[in-house]
Amino acid sequence: MYHNFIIDSECELGSVEAADSIHASLANNIFSNLSRDEHGRLRNLVTAAITSGESNAMIFPSDMHQLGYLASIRPAREPGYAVIALSDLCQPWRALTPEMLVDMFAITRAEAEIALLLHDGRDLDEIAVKRSVSRETIRTQVKSLLGKLDLPSQKRLVMLLSRVALALPGKPNTAFGLFPAIE
Image (cartoon, rainbow, N blue to C red; front, side):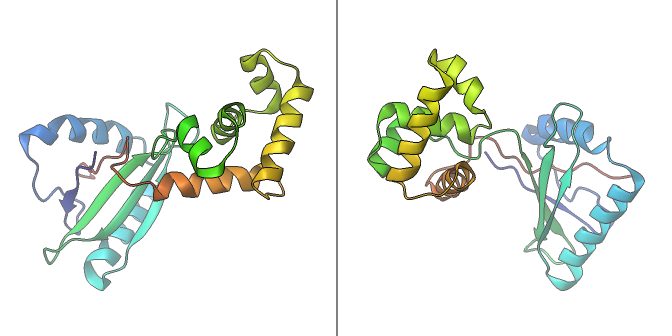
């Protein structure tokens, strides 16, 4: 779900509806962890969006996980404002299912499940434990999967699945646009 907030060049919220107060509260928690340099960089990106129409993005750190948040900054339709959309990078953008991969790529369900575990950042040992099989069995299944998809490596498989996930129709499962006043 997206909630876009418009902000001015001072990084003050343009308008906030009551329903967005929960998101604004969450944003305050996220942005309160920014360093002075990160606040300055964000302010520069917002100013560039407002004055020259440039869209840009930056990564914000998170206390809760390594990847942090992606902030997309773009010009708003209203002059003098920009829009910020914030996405949690630890959440999948769109949900891929084993069934989707079986249908898309003509692979087995086991191969699809392994592909999704690789996409989720799991290594072969973790997948073997999760599936209660040997590491060698998983290795053989991964080789078969890569051969069927004509891919040279697991990295390429993860890249392919990421692109497929981004191209899927429908709404993202975790994305929200929010931004608190920066002091």
